[in-house]
Image (cartoon, rainbow, N blue to C red; front, top):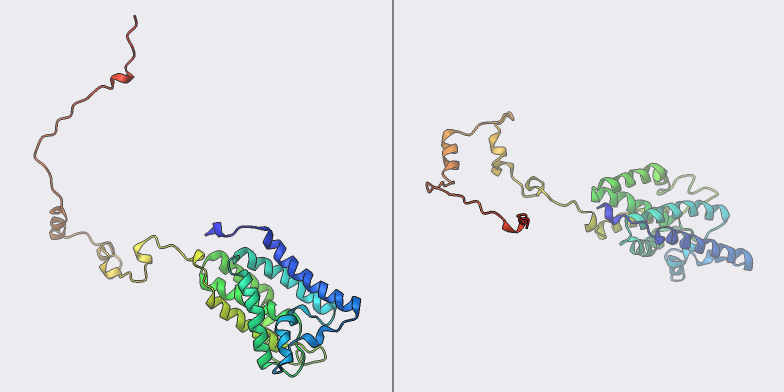
Length: 259
């Protein structure tokens, strides 16, 4: 399984490219005095659907952008390294599905920022690692929940999310749900544990196992009865014919006589 974890240029290139795009959009706003906020998600309006695609690239201020950039660098790199086959699909459908859910359940206001995608990545990496039951991916899940476990407090309305610096808890909740759903949809057969022994098979029945039958109810080993030994030995046959062996010398390897 470890052979699937390969460091490639995409592990660094993908996160950098995505974050650079975010900063480039923010630079355009400052340089040309644009206001992209109106291109965000405005729930339950036709024009607000454009934000499903554009909202992750729009941020209110530099603090908002910075707070999203660091987690994206880390989580996108982890996604590309451990789930390279699923990374692009998770990012693409994560943005679309979480955006549509936000469009349905969001408050009547513009929802912007890449925090919804961050919740998609945290949710996907956490739940997928537990589903694979592979120790390295489970360890990754635990690491993610230790570092970003506090984000769960921002998926529900509270005084902080509804205060002066209003936070789109709807977008966070949508990202969390989307990441979990994607973890169920996208399978990782490359991390499936290989079955080497009969007792690892789902249909294994210890009562039919000849070896397990040698133990009593208390776990003590029970010797074979004389009848069982006789049955076992009856399955083997011996021959009374004498066997003669003839040794043939390999003449090719013999030293040549001296002349």
